[in-house]
Length: 490
Image (tube, rainbow, N blue to C red; front, side, top):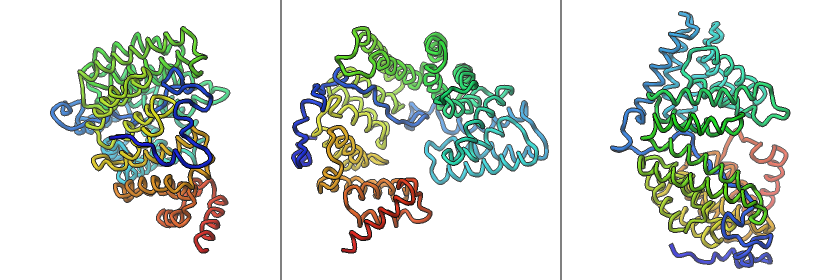
């Protein structure tokens, strides 16, 4: 698509064009060596996204295999090593049946939400009857109060640690322990001062991840989760990185070399190590050793991911990871586009792929405002792409305003910005008419842009109950509504 200078960049007393060649600090923004920020974090789903077809139909990858593994294996484990009793066995097994359906859902849609609620209710019912099985206790917490982590944060904080410790004493499959320890670590890692249990849970997560990966019959999605957990937690445990490279990576090579996730986990690790070596300073603040470590680790990530692509071309996370490597290496745009096209061919709804490319095109990295906005318009206009992709243009505008430090009111009240916002949201809701959560974002963006009629319309579309926290509290919401009603009644 031919790029053009977006009119927004030519308007107002703050002229963005003056920043096209240099950043706000006066440094040239020509790639990672001129950037202050560390590697951008691209949010992706924990499970591998795979296409159906000849290459993706092996047993360990199939949804049916995964469902059966979770149903039959967990039931067998419960009967063999769980706290069984005729008073609650049927309830526990029914909860496991629901779980085997739930794990097939990548997103928490209405069906998944219903399954989670049922699992939580059944786990509580069995518990009320006297069942103190460790896995059942985890189900009760995870699918009960765990569905509202903000409301029950304190209880979950200690509850997940207790669940993980209880599962330590059982013979349940290490993969069950991976999930419990992951949640325990997620809640406790950033405590200050650190909890005594935090280090134990981190070590346990790394250990159980390794043990799970040693099972060659593990469903591929779960193996990918175990590998991701191992990479994530290794930096939080003494000698964790050494264990990762000396023990986990050889297991991946032995048991999982036919699957892309094995290379993705290793590639992401080396990419992260590259940015750790470089540090978070601007280019002139990076040491010679920092650049050396940065380039050496990126080279490892590049080689690992390319090898994975030759082995398994069904996992969208691999080309996404390569886009981030391209950014780090300041690779030509043509090379980045090659990996973006590969990602979108696997999953035309991949918002993660779109975000990876958008990061590459940010002015502080390897792009220009014109190129970034042009790509944002492409995200709205390309009919073959779906999901949340049309909202990339909204994200891009927020990034540009922030990066160039444009006054918020001047930027958002520009009619061209509003035109883009409206086009993004209209296309998104055309594709996702039942999505209520994004209407909060639309309402807030409309308010920022001074489009008070649309703000009111979106609030009405949200309906009742209204989550006032998304409007910064009930008092702020009522203030916004009062202003919007007054403005639209003139």
